[in-house]
Image (cartoon, rainbow, N blue to C red; front, side, top):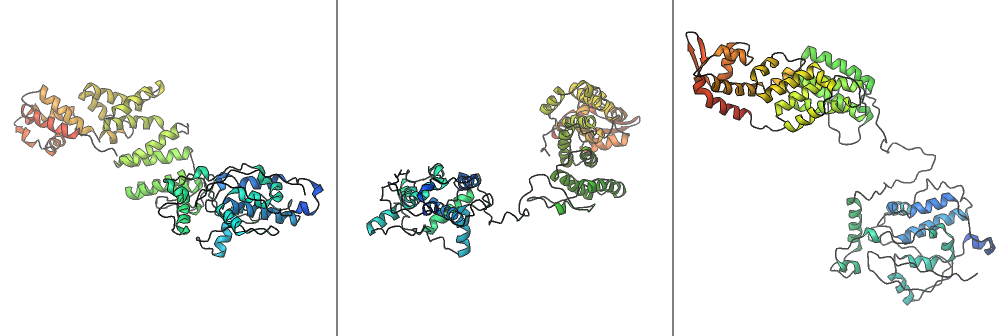
Length: 499
């Protein structure tokens, strides 16, 4: 056999110690199937599926840190050699065959190998016996690619993985906080190897960005097992229950607990009837949250989704639940942007009134800058804009006229800040009308339904001492109440936590 020149590879750094590579004499080569059939056959042409299998074996994302490259290469050579000897190279499904590192890992788990045992490939048959000095030198070169190059000889040169990049994949994946740990001379040098192996495993699972695939036992290509794989797209529910309690998801939803669109449409009609009959908000809110969750996990974004969110938003607004209302309003904005129907101008007006309630000038300015002429001409939006203008000008007379004539459900939002505006108006009245005014004037100007309601409002804020009953009726002592109403307005205007 012609003499084969040896091209040494760069020595790879190991977890045990870093030793400069030393050339060792190449032992007799292992007879390969091609050599056994005659040297005149030349270099074997490997099928593309075999080459792809070898490339995937040495891909960086498939590396397992606690399995050395020498172990993996030995296992790979064994698998390919067995296929060549059995003349099944073209019949093996290389795309489904597990990678050599996976085979090694499964064998260790099945045989109950202890992590303290350092597995090293056995010396192939037919190689010459080394002397003690040569054996020590070979052991000192453990986990180095130069060992395998010298040991396997011509058989390895014909295998296709020798055409891949021979650079160490461990080099860029290991960081040494201390130089002594690299050389194996640190204070823990004499400790058990199991600690080092456990540390390596710990780093593997701590680094969530390495992208290691889950190593599953190999199954034949005829086995169609997709039960443990996560769905790649939205799920389709199979639950047929109209009512279902809301629960927060901690993982991938189970289709058996999710209702499909056809059932959700029936659920919405059922909830609407339930709300009209029982008016139990806690129950209805829980059911609507469950309905919204089923829409979300199935990625359902249709006109039905808009209807469901609008109904829940109106119910939450009626009950003063701004938390649920804001969640629905946020989703509705995204759905309206897709032109799925609904009532976008109605909820645009509600957003304007909500910003007045929270005194959110920044978002209000952004909203006003993005209004289209068509939206400004809508009656509901026009009313909300007029309300904003009246407050900006301090025109409380105009504001309470608009309050008494609020379209749709905007009055529920205005009720949330009308008390603050009444205190502001009373402060202005106390400056303009002295020493007193009739309570009836206050009732008409501030949008109260009766004198009793206006008197109750003053008393609820502690101003009963500023009401005086006379022959011509109850009067408000504006000359004395100015400071009181200014303090009450300051307390009512204090910033509140954002819901």
